[in-house]
Image 1 (tube, one colour):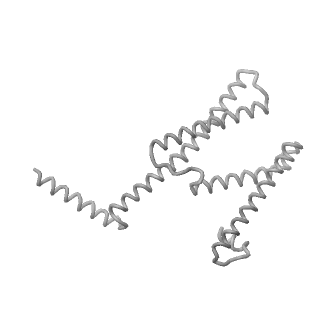
Image 2: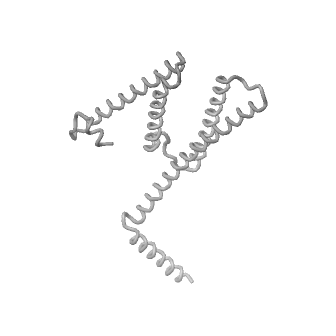
Image 3: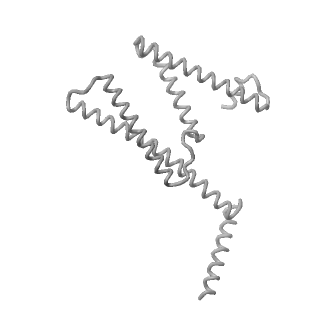
Length: 193
């Protein structure tokens, strides 16, 4: 990715300020391209009701931009702030559950708006099933993301504590330190008896 950016870049210097401006320009280009794709989908797809083949590429491009942004934002921690405690984890899971239910309800309402209100029992059953599946899948994805963020925070905390106790030594020296501490505890407990 950096090689491609260097080839497209007019400036290959080491100046950080210039590189930041260039990245800002590239992000603005991406936003403009995404806006044009969204505009194309709205105008040709929704307003003029052109055939799907004519505006499908714009829709795919728009989804790729959204997916890429979500992946990058999730990987960098922008989408989910740090979760340190169990209470915060439970609070975040509850929030994700509510948001998933709201999105599933919106999907069902939009489907009913598009297809009309169901008139048969099986049509209503399909809507209920759509609500359950959409909400369940969305909540499952969000739950996994929240749980991974919590585990990452816990691992970082454990790593900080272990580096505080043992310093930045290797595993062998950590084993020696643990063995030494265990030996001292055994000797001390033997003195008590």
